[in-house]
Amino acid sequence: MRGAGRRGGSRGGGYVRRKTAADSSSDSKTSLVDEWRAHEEDCAARVLQNQLRAYMSRQRMARLLLSVYEKHYDPIRKQHFYVNTLTNVSTWEKPLLLVRFLPGDHKISRGRAELAPREAAQRIQRIVRAFLAKKTIRQLVRENYMKLFDHESRVFYYLNTRTGERSEQKPAFFRQRPNTAGMNSKRASASSKNDEDDLEIEPFYFRKAVCKVSSDGNAYGSGVIGRFCGILCVLADGKTLADEDTARSARVVCNYADERVAFPVLLSADTFFAGIKMPEDAAARLQPLKGVTPQSPKRKTQRPHFDFVLCALNEDQFLIAAGSNIQPLRFEMNDRKLGCGESESLRLSDHLEVVGHPHGKLQVLHQRQLANLVPNSINPQHLQYDRVMETGSAGCAVFTRGGKLIGVHQFAGPKEPPPLSCWYIKPILNTALPLHPLSRSY
Image (cartoon, rainbow, N blue to C red):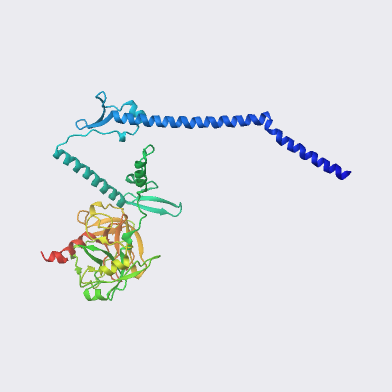
């Protein structure tokens, strides 16, 4: 009887639950919730339909306005005006309908202007000049800025190499325009391309152009690779590459630095070799600086026959070994990045980078500041630092922070004091220019 009671209770409980589930659809509260849900879906559909009708109406009104209004340009007042083609009424101010339905009037058709051939040619020339000027300005902006990575904050930033200012925003010519929200798909795609137009992360090609040079005359020399009047060559001191025979047995190694793969390059002294002898009277006495111990007079050591040397490289072998990793400098006074800097652009206290291989070390970078132009700022021959350099820096190259070559170190004997200055690049190139084969033929 006890078990039967449990079975009967179980059947009764299941029957009650099934009855409750069956009668739930007839509950007034549940039916009210269904009505609310249906009402919300109907309201949402009406909102979508209204939005679609409004969009289609705006598009129809915009097409109607485009067929009525034209935008013209008055060359006298140098101002645009709008013409209603139905009433032939013109106005300087933008009509309110255009303001309401066409906030950006780039779609408004412009009437054709009848121009004389001369005036049409002048307009085309102005457009081309404006395009070339903008391209040049963008190139100058690229050369004056560096995109670097801050390992502490883990962000990229832009460094102005002239002023030293640091900013996390792109330079003005590489920023996206703010009024790109309401553009059509074509202009939106163009704006996305402009937004991607950015400076590449600084590869420091000017530092990579400095190489290690070893020879029988000096086992620990340095040099800088560049093009001199179209010839790929290395500029080194006159002790390391004393003559053509020494250059034939010399060893030049590029990428001799940390985290790089070094490779040798071959000299081609038979193609071009120019020994540069600087004038004796140009070696002016350096002025003592505040806070710097005056240097003792240099002991007269056996001076090399040449002060500097330009020796050609085997270009085919260099291009195969270097690839795109190393870009040669341009040994010309163009005041551009990877070129040679003019003295007019130099200012006292400018930050300088002295790059080389003192005593045969891996590539070393010394930070210095420009303290003085010797003998004067109009026709400088030497660049004086704020403090002395490391010994054994023969052939080391001196760059501005923006990557312009401005000086090269001369050979100094082991008993001479550490160098406080370097030779300015312009008198070196001026002396080497008459030694070029093309200049000799004239």
